[in-house]
Length: 411
Image (cartoon, rainbow, N blue to C red; front, side):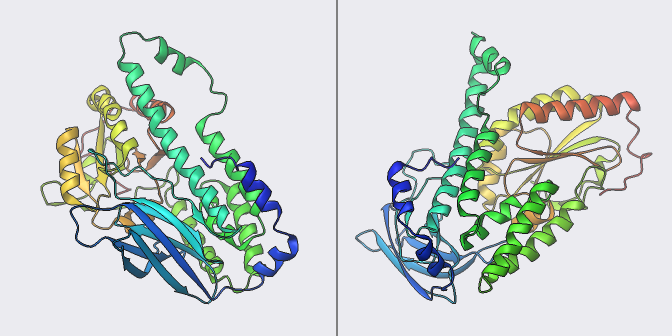
């Protein structure tokens, strides 16, 4: 979640007058300088590379430049552009920083992970830049703190459940949170959006706001996007984002409850190309995950419990990894010992677009006819209850038929 603005930050923001902001918003910036430092470098690499990408809002940022970190641990870029936009700095494929390019920026990045056990948990990098750039600073911080709180809560519940003394676990299960994680994130996000609603940098947030599953939120985001397109005709990213959102919404409509699960085939752990047709006649939980995803790994023991409890009632699980490192995927499989089929996406971006997710674990529960019952974002107690209820209802409604007698319409 985004950190509350410090008092110094608020005071500085108030010094930016409406006249100054109006001048900024009506004048596209043609070039800026990016200066940065990297605190830690990869001892195994001769060259410490930093890449600069531009977000074109089509789904995947495009690399526009690269630099080698100097002996003094510094790097720099000169951006020439038609107008300001969203850029991402990638340091050694370990650390990232995002900024709005309407003024020169500076950033001190942590760089390579020096921990004995390396996990790609986001490290927050504050980018010194313009007033508009602070919107991205605060948005990134909000999301990263939310992610870390998610991991903390998973760990807390996991160890509380294992403890001999169940007092803490009982407290966690029975006590209503004053400010649940999702509500906390949403509240901070809404305040930020209200503060920057008419600024061009708002294009950064509208992609996430235009939830294809929430009609009211979608309509609000699209209205704001139309305002940006009208107010800032030079902001071509807003026009591209509109098309991307419309495309994603059309795809999301194909993934609603009752719709057939898309037909997919991915390489298995044994190297063969496998689809999901073999699971016809059973309830199927399709789990999208990755070896580097902490919440995904935390969810696996719980899915194992679910699998053990319901496999004799016609329930199966298939894990589809979006790992790009095949060896890391194989090691994670060996460590986790999941007793169900493992598949590996051969095109992560295409898979994420086809199944409309940007975070993992994302799961789809599919019924015996191959139709989507539920989409689950994260494996929470609520998500588990939904899966159990769906399977129990389906089992009571009709016995599980043989795999040769049930027509498969979805895969």
